[in-house]
Length: 267
Image 1 (tube, rainbow, N blue to C red):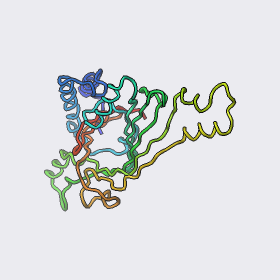
Image 2 (image 1 turned 45 degrees about the vertical axis):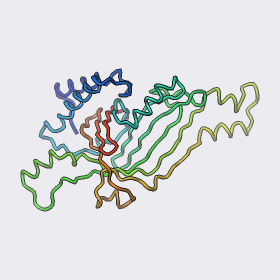
Image 3 (image 1 turned 135 degrees about the vertical axis):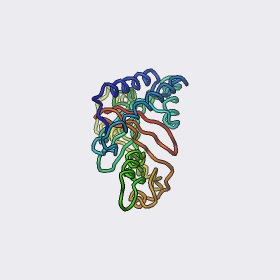
Image 4 (image 1 turned 180 degrees about the vertical axis):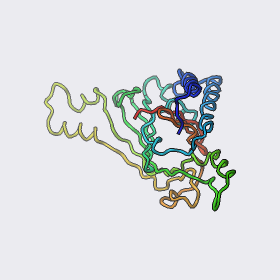
C-alpha cells in the first residue's frame, strides 16, 4: 500500500483524475484522451515501487467498496456505450468493486430501464443491481523455494505476481429492483385502495432476485496448485494485478479479457 502524503504523489493523482474527467468513464474517450490517461496512470503506478516499503498487496487496505472512474475494458465499455447510444432507454449508474480481507469480491453494476425502473443515475440506488460474486486469493507465484538471498528479496519486491489476485467467479444475481413510479401505479392505482394482493405484489417486485450459479467458474490468474482452483473447477486464463493502492485510489490491470480499471473509494 502506498502513502499519498508526498507532494509528487499527490500531483500524480491529480493529473490522473483530471485526465479521466469528461470521458464518461472511458466510453467517450478520444485516442488522445486515452493516451493521456495511460501516461498519468503509469506515472502514478510508478510510486508503488519507489519507496523502500514492502510493495506486497495489503488485503486489509484493499477491503472496501470502490467505484469505477475509468476503464478501457471492452466488455464494460460496450455496456456504457449501449446506454449512451440508447437515448435514455437504458441507464448505467455506478459500477462498484467490493473486497473484503477474507477473500470475497463482488462486482456490481446498477442499470436502469426507461418506464420500468427508477432512474439509475450515478450516486443513486435506483434501477436494479447486477452483482457477480467471486473468491480471490493473492498469488505469490514469484516467490522462490528454499533459502533466499538479498538478490531474491530484491526480485520479489519488483515481481508483479506479489500483487496479483487469482479469482473464481461463483454466482451472478439480479437484485435490488426499484420499479418506476409509473409501473407502480399500474399495479396499485393511486385512486383505488391498496389491498393485500397489491401490497404483496409490490413487495414481491421489490424483493425479487434472480440467481445464476456459475458452476463452471473460471479461475483467473490461479496456478493449478492454488487453493482457489482446488475449490472450484476452472482454467487459468489471466490475472488481476493491483498496480496501485492507497487510502482512496485503486488501479487494477486485468490479463485475459484485458483492461485497466481505475477506482476511487466510497466506503
